[in-house]
Length: 237
Image (cartoon, rainbow, N blue to C red; front, side, top):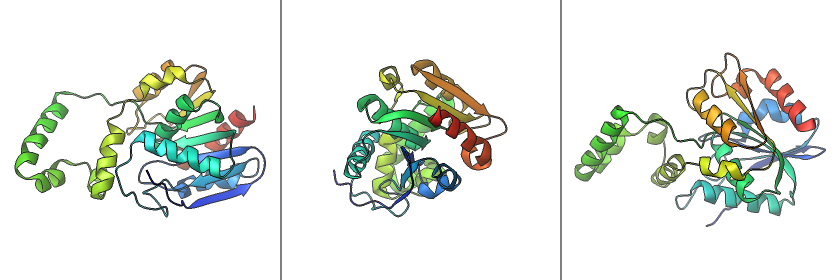
């Protein structure tokens, strides 16, 4: 696995605070948080490999691969003990690190955190069956017809990576997390809906859950002042 050099921002002073962005996003998604929290912390925000201004992937990575590369990057930056603020896919990576590298993070704020497999109904199973049947005959058409809007924008390597990422259930890792975790979700989030937030909260020891009223998957952008106040209070307590 080759990580390559990433695009990153380092600013502020104080205790280290690392940002992990969501899928198809970049470090700039945390612009409001970086501007505010860098007044109190030494901030490190970077583009995951395959996103933003960081190098493209040469092979399909899993969540575990991203976690290993992130750990290697932080070690190269001599960041050994820090707090982490992660969104969505970044939350998946954070959960892996929280479970497998328990001394890395002192506190973790995970917003719109992914990692819980969605509920699948009969219509979904029928759609998967149809996709597999069509793929045997016309694979290119199957990809265009059945892939999600997000999936269709990806390169072939990133599509394979996407499959690895979204099909991994991270809930078995939760019981191993000892670090204090604060989950912050938008009450109207449809990408990672409230039932996922409840599963994360119930299965993560020493965790709490806050819902932000009227917000969706990007509550940290929709109500940045409130979100920043929550983050500051949590990390500085």
